[in-house]
Image (cartoon, rainbow, N blue to C red; front, side, top):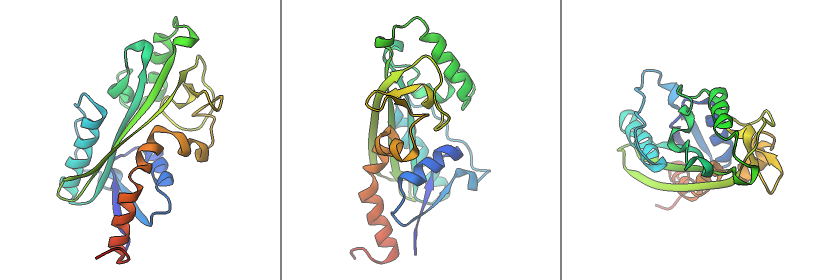
Length: 208
């Protein structure tokens, strides 16, 4: 039987991205929207890892299922590392991409182009149905914040995050290219051996 994995998110764009990155492992996915009455995890950690662990462990314990959660965000050097763990609520309301991007541009308005360096961070945590952490991984992608929106793809700060090697923003890159170099792709790619082993065990094809 297939291995069932709950993705610790209610964001449909993030779910789609995670499913595409983890394609080919023989997993069956659900996400937290399948349990509308499940309480929200309070993301009060001061690091990406702390928040990812909370989301994975608490949701696994409540659902008694395997949960893969991640916490990610944008670290801007000229802003002393902000928005960081507050990336999704930088402008106040959680998940308001337009407002978050507008605040970012406003705060960087007087910063010269060469000083607008930034990087995305993603920490992924896999927890078993008892809430034990089985694996923790991290991925990063470095770039620069530009002054205008470019591209309709992705979400969050993607239309403003320029990847220098490609001369394109995450909003302009195809999903295939983004999944090869993004912070989330790099973190999840490091989980593939663990997830592949779990899927093989669930299907009866892995080692006894």
